[in-house]
Length: 292
Ligand code: COA
Ligand code: MG
Image 1 (spheres, rainbow, N blue to C red):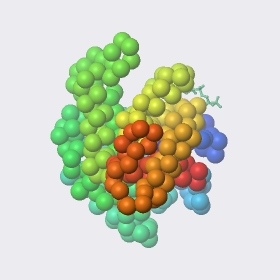
Image 2: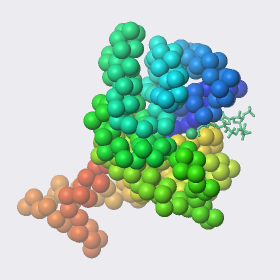
Image 3: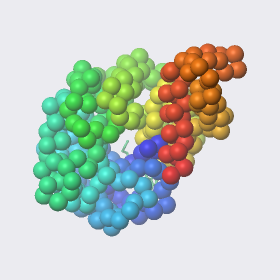
């Protein structure tokens, strides 16, 4: 999935827009976009949205719960699982053991609701605490329901006591570049989706398009969004273009037609071999997925 759009879980006005949104996945937020006094009402509203969309869904519906250390996470899970969310996003991740706990709690709730074990996915917001950075190699083993890894720069900066996370030109400072790269590596090691963080300047569509293009080149498969207008930009950026697909089809055709089963060939004067076959297959799979 390419675009993952947050909706504050207590906002009736924004929740009512659900049917119009172009995001591949919508994340109904119970965490930072909801003030402490509104947590309970948000849980009810999110559950109502899930219940109202129990049939085939236009977009996947995910719920961002409160962190495990908040004392609210288990009640969040207990409150929303009966609505059959496609997945749960876990923020402020700290340890792999914590992920295993969430996994076990979900399994028990799935049993309670008569759902197949493992049906509800998990995405981890992987870099919001300093400690998390040292656990990122363990994500895949901690939960078989892991579907993706994303990251956050704001909470990490607050935890570190940093005044900024970007340069004046808008580029990530080294610590946040590291967090972003670790996310990419952790997702790849666990063989799940790598989802880049939010682009907060939501009126700047050109800046977003540039950011997404780079994210896709770096290996991310999707990105978080905060505003409905960001979803189409993200979707376009993470869908392979015609030229790319043309290249991929050429690569595969060349290897199919190679008379002696050669492992290395040339395309327009450039060497292509096994990794290029994988890359070509990946591009065409992404394109096929985008057309679904
Ligand atoms: N989901 C659904 N609808 C949204 C939306 C969202 N994330 N963001 C904005 N909209 C709606 C608005 O309600 C508005 O419709 P309306 O005029 O009928 O009310 C329309 O889209 C245009 O919104 P706009 O006026 O441009 O922005 P805003 O000032 O209403 O909201 C934000 C700006 C940033 C507060 C809002 O986009 C938002 O709440 N984003 C999500 C925040 C979040 O969940 N953060 C946690 C993760 S980092
Ligand atoms: Mg946050």
